[in-house]
Amino acid sequence: MTEIQSAVLVFVLLLASTGIGAIVRPLLPEEHKAQETVQLIQLLVGMLVTFAALVLGLLTASAKTVFDTTNSDMRSYATSIIELDRTMRDYGTQLDHARRLLRTYTAAAVASTWPNEPRPPGEYPDIEPSTKTDSLASSTLGAILGQGQREVRLLDPRDDYHRQLAAEAAARFEQLIALRWKLIEEAHGSISYPFDRILVGWLLIIFLCFGLIAPRNALSLVTIMLGALSIASAVLVILDLDTPFTGPIMIGSQPMRDALAYEAR
Image 1 (tube, helix red, strand yellow):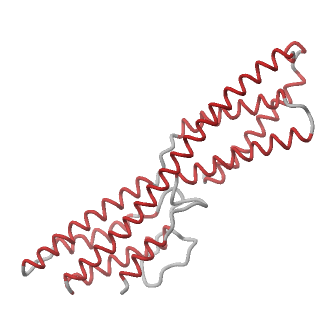
Image 2 (image 1 turned 90 degrees about the vertical axis):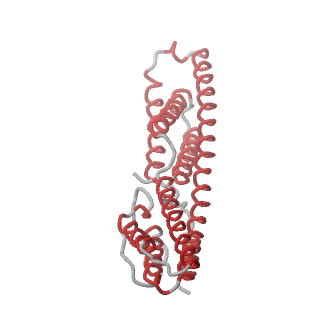
C-alpha cells in the first residue's frame, strides 16, 4: 500500500467512525445522553487528543530526521563515487573498464531510483523501479559494483605510486559499498507499524466520540471532515518522509547526476 493510499484509508476510516457514532447516538437511552455523560466523553476525548497530538508530533520529527539523514547520506554517496572515479582515473588505463562499470552503475541507479525524471544518456541496464524501497538494492546494480571492485583488487601495481593508488581505490570501493547498504537500510523507514495502528485506533475512538456528541448540522459535518482531512494529510507526510525513495516527497537526484556528469568528463 502506497503512502497516498494509506492516507486515504485513514481519512475514510475516521469518517466511518464518526458515522458509526452518529448512527448509534439516537439509539442510546436518554440517561446515556445526560450532561454528566457528555462531560465525561469530552474529558476522554481531550485526553486522547493530547496523546494523539504528542505522538503525531514525535512521529513527524522522527520521520523528518530519517529523511534528512538519508538526504545527507545520498550526498556522501555521490561524493564517494566522484572520489573513487578520480582515484581510478589517476591510476591509469588499467582501470578504464572499472570506470565504465562505475559510470554504468551510476546512470542505472539514477534511472531506476527516480523513474519519473529524465533518464541519463548512455547505455545501461534497465532496472525495474521498486515500489517498496529504493532501487539501489537491485542485484543487477550490486553485481556491477562487485565486478568493478574485483578488477581493482586484481590490480598488479608496478611501483609505490600505483600501489598507493590501488590501495586507495580498494578502500574507496569498500566505503562506497558500505554507504550503498546504509542507504538501502534507511529506505525501509523507521516507523513501527504496530505502533502506527495503535495511533490510528486512538484516532478512531476520538472520531467515534465526535459522532456521539456532535450536533447534527452541516457545520459540524464540515468541521469533522476538515479535521479528518488534516489528520490524513499529517499521516501522508509522516509516511512519505519515512520512505525517502518513494512517494511525492523524495530525495533529490541532483547529487547522483552531478557524480555522473563528473564521471563523463
